[in-house]
Image 1 (cartoon, rainbow, N blue to C red):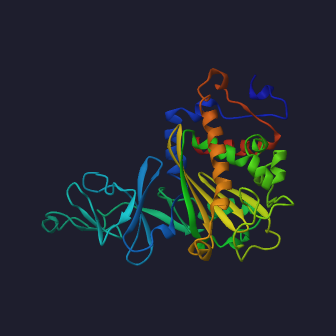
Image 2: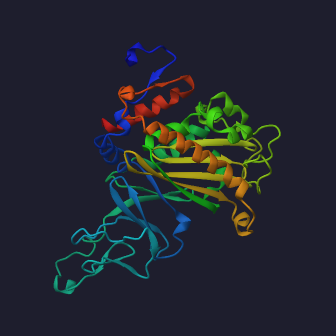
Length: 373
């Protein structure tokens, strides 16, 4: 059966090779992850001058650091001399500069070449021209987003636009005050599945009644199979007896002060392509960042964010964190289960999407368009 033969209720998915072929993954690295805005680090994690973090963006290692002027900068993590990896640690702090461990070429926090053996004997070497390769960087929602493209796409149209399109307005997310929230918990998941499996899973709730018993107790409408982001501006309503977004429906912590009555007791889910999920509830925000490492491997960093006073007070956040942690484990197990079949002859032409998943077809169209550009 081909896509043309399908009944109107069903849409064809991407073929199985889209999730396993190294050539497809390499093309995605070049035309998606190295071309779009990529959410790299949480700004507050780099508190003072010299603080840095390295992250994988496409096939590149990216170094994000805070300069002496207090601003964040992003560079390719490559020494300009012979190409050695400049920083091999995932995170840390340097006092004044980054020094390559191979030949001691040294770069200031602004990326400028400041020293190298015998450099004074080479007056024709421009210290800016031979500084680190600088990348575009924008800060929004408390995170630093980087773009490796020479000419980045509009941040407002892509990143901000994705949030606006989902919530129905450009200022709806401001009520949650993400810039001022504190990190209550971070969990990293090493998922043995293609990054697209994870996005597709997050976008639909056809599976919710099957694998998310705790979530559907808190958000009963999810048991009907329609995800919150299927409807523009719609937030999934808490169940009548539910007091908070917790594992047992018990009361949560202090409500975010900007959350309106219309947003209270509701859950909103947002996908920002190519790899960010933002989950909004009245008393906290759950923020996922995906780092695709191989066709069948994706690192997911998940942050639970609360009011600073809630985190500083030492209040027990276990019941709050446990709900979405359990959802994550359930989702990622399902993604890994699907990944196992992507090379099967039964899936060579892909599968199908039912009506409550038809919006995933738009995501597939986006992927095809990007790879064919």
